[in-house]
Length: 264
Ligand code: AMP
Image (cartoon, rainbow, N blue to C red; front, side, top):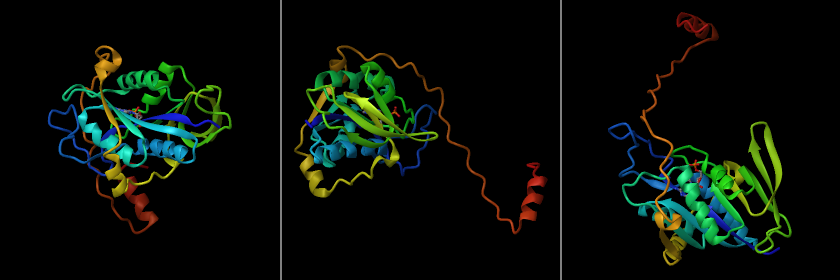
């Protein structure tokens, strides 16, 4: 089986352990001075791509991010866990952060340039929780898509050049697991149980500094300004503070209290 090229979309997000606060004004979250990391679902997508390369089934893993220069740190992490090279599709500082449609348009242009047989994304970014970018990108490319991936197997015959290979996947759906065979090229989005991503080790972080990281302005890639977003954030609010729990001594007391509160 000839090895294939994999493009992985990775997003820099506020770290999952940070308590997110709404910034004054109520239109964005407080993202200055807080820890950022690779989006966890992107880590899973990347891990799967790196494992394909380690098994000799992929010959190159390219990590791509659409964002400001700050996203370089996410790409360096991607390089440290095994991507061969990285591309930052650069958005000017202070510009409107690109949403799923703009990111998908940029990644589609990158696919045109790089010609991967597999594009892997996370199922969702934990900052916007959109769960849209993979689906929009598959529609733009007119490629088969396997979302919410929990297992991936390459069929013999899949590989660069042939364009006729296929992959077998398992995806998580509401009622259980769905198994599909997809023709290559294909787009996949990673769910939580696909794998357990590795940590970047210190030696690999050092080595990653020497791997290529290309900066490509978004407008140059698209051949003009990106289309305006069709979404407008009206207001952000923090969720209501939870009321403290109360301990009851017996079921009878629980029923009594629920009745008194008018909940029965
Ligand atoms: P979303 O549709 O925003 O929930 O994001 C789903 C997935 O799309 C993420 O896990 C990433 O793999 C990819 N993605 C979203 N935004 C970006 C971005 N700015 N740069 C690169 N990939 C992205």
